Length: 134
Image 1 (tube, rainbow, N blue to C red):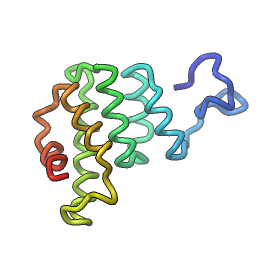
Image 2 (cartoon, helix red, strand yellow):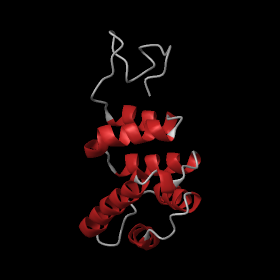
Image 3 (spheres, rainbow, N blue to C red):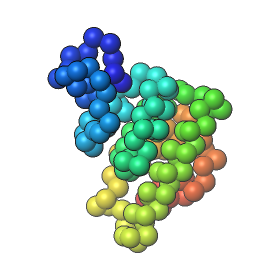
């Protein structure tokens, strides 16, 4: 994020003065998470925007961590992402009963399951239990 030489219009982090913004809308945040090139970028985004992350952001973040094959032993914050995702999915389940069909998409479930497997986080039982309920 904040790539050198990026055009101000193309970089949601940039302002006309070249400094970083502190606020991103949901679409910009998703784009930043999806295009992050390193674990450090993802960790920085997670740290800065943790309070703003919704279920879609958390799935995107977990999936990107899997795509980058981050070693969880050196990136303990990834476990917090999985825990927050379990919490968000639990809120959907408790408010909608066992029916997620109109809120949680099959793609979100598949992306989260793939990332858990890729990151060898199959022991994240609360999240797996919620995904199985889907």
